[in-house]
Length: 130
Image 1 (tube, rainbow, N blue to C red):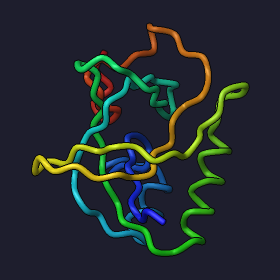
Image 2 (cartoon, helix red, strand yellow):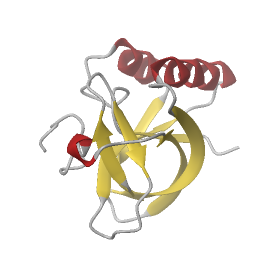
Image 3 (cartoon, rainbow, N blue to C red):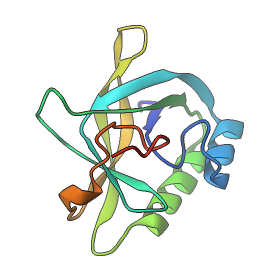
Image 4 (cartoon, one colour):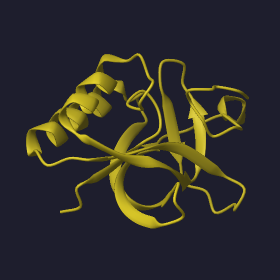
């Protein structure tokens, strides 16, 4: 099983959310990186949607996890944050790391409707610049 998780919102380093602390205390931070996609602001949290546009990138953090209980808790958290009827789904994706290398990691994709007015053009939820 791939042990890496790429986070782009409330789980990122620097986020004040308690689940960011939960992750930081139980996983090893690997590096910053980015993923091709479009980021949308739902207020308390963002959602990541796939994109084939080479200009669409979302920044985040890569963690290494070794405990199945951590994965289960993160899945519960993402499910609880899902804005119904949408939901988050964990899938493997390619991540470009700060050093120029690439790796595969689990990512929570948002599976629901979005409005273009919710798009975070910077691709950085912690900046939340439109």
